[in-house]
Length: 481
Ligand code: P61
Figure 1 (spheres, rainbow, N blue to C red):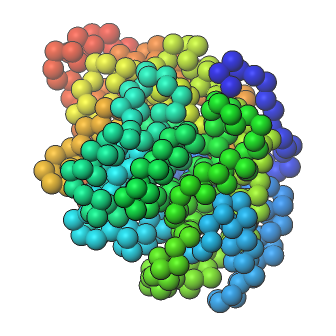
Figure 2 (figure 1 turned 60 degrees about the vertical axis):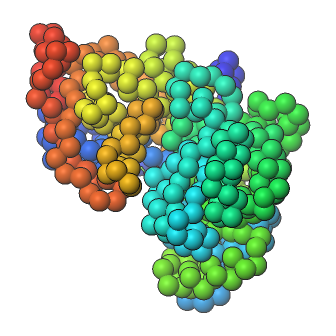
């Protein structure tokens, strides 16, 4: 992958959706109206949408055919059983509870498993996952390897758990106050970094000693399996589907946002091998999501998911999916753009601290960079830095993550290589003119998951560093002025 091995899409295009380029003046206005937050832009004003790979995949003709086979019965929909069979077959979990999307599953598992005051170790936080843990009264503890917080460290399995950190937590708070270890396959906030099977086995060994179960955030498990197949010694002869199964077999329960790996627009599920947890979830799901045979999903969506799961673990599919992300990342790397390395699986992450060294983290560099990229090119990206990290639940102060990133997330089966080239050129242009990008200040901050709806305004030019930059303002007068 790193050597740009050739890859091609294992499909041909049957239907297209036009995209529209806007003018710079229009985008300036749209950005202002959106409070410099790319989540608040209207999608019709976006040229290439790299906000997320969540729910944005192109479905196959088979999935669309499945949509027509929707059994919209309130109870016992045939499509539920197809979905359940696919989950049992490819992921191996015994019991399945459908939810409207990933956070619905996170809500259920957190409410069921976390007693007030407990600690939940995990391989880096994810926004919704941590919030549900906190709302249930728990405290998230980051036990990912240190290298995950360093955008330059090129170790291959940066999503791994540091066993010593996990052991230290067990020693400090006691195993009975750790309801489970949360282990994500490909760690989103670290730049889409995989875990190794070796590490998962070691975590399994340690947690079994203390009878602590593992809850698997399997949102992008097939992408992780592909990285194991490519880079972990001993797995080259296994199919992606086999590796996915090996990963799941080493865990006890799972939460899944089907909107990513599994190639559907909406849906998720909770799965478990524990009959007691299943019983509780089957009861709780009717309160928050819907009956246990639809959990907030339409019958047609469950059918598309059953088919999507099958397609998602195919070697041809996953090679092209990750191949495209790596092609794009490699282009940026060769242009000298500071990105998180190694290149992850669902997108390329820009290191905003290095991209915009003239901004302090209080000026929200990743937010400012995402706004600047949209303004310049119509490409929509996402902040993954101090805004996303939110506030410390005890002190109320900003969490300042070491990683201050802009995520360029690649939807599956949607854009072409030519799109990747155009985006790379746009980022290169912004990089060449990076001095012009001004910081932002937050003018509105919602209580929960603030990054979704927060609003910003460009900072006035203050401070030594920024004043110096002001002199060189020509392109800058166009940027966020
Ligand atoms: C994303 F800005 N991810 O990456 P739900 N676990 C993991 C996810 O990646 C994930 C969920 C659980 C999104 C959507 C999103 O801060 C944000 O189906 C590893 O979205 O409920 C979702 O799954 C939750 C974007 C979510 C965000 C939260 O774009």
